[in-house]
Image (cartoon, rainbow, N blue to C red; front, side, top):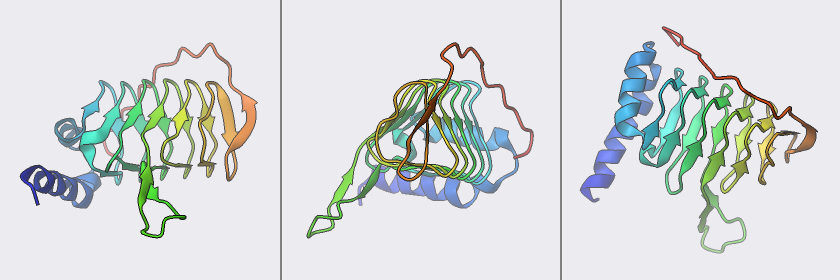
Length: 179
C-alpha cells in the first residue's frame, strides 16, 4: 500500500469512527477542512455523516449536510455549489458495479450539485448525475439521471413532478452548537 493511500485510509477511519459522532460542529468542521478537497465558508456538516475518500469531495459555501449522510468520493469527485441543503440520511454515490460485467467491474462517475439545490431526506443520488441549480430532489427519491435546473423530482426512479421558482436569493445560515 502506498503512503498516500495509507494516510487517506487513516484519515477516513479517524473521521468515520470517532470525529463524526463528536457533538461539537466546530471540531468536526476543523477536521473536514484539513481532509476534504474543499469545504466552503459557512458550510456545516452535522453529526454522523460519513465520507468515503474526502480528498475528492468539494463542498461549496453555506451548505448544510444533515445528520447521517453518506458522501462517496472514492474514485470520482462530488462537487456542490453554494447554499445546497442535503437532507438527513441522504446518500451521494460516485461508484458502483456494472451488473452486466462478468468480472463485477467498477462503474461510476462524478456527481455535481448546483447552487440552491435541495436534496430531501433519505434521497439517493447515483453515480454520474448532475443536479442542476435550484433543483429539488424529494425525500426518498432515487436519482438515476441528470436533473434539470429548477426541476422538482420524486420517486424511484426520480421523475419530474414540478418546477421551482427561479428567483432564489436565500443564503443558508445554519449554525448548531451541538449536532
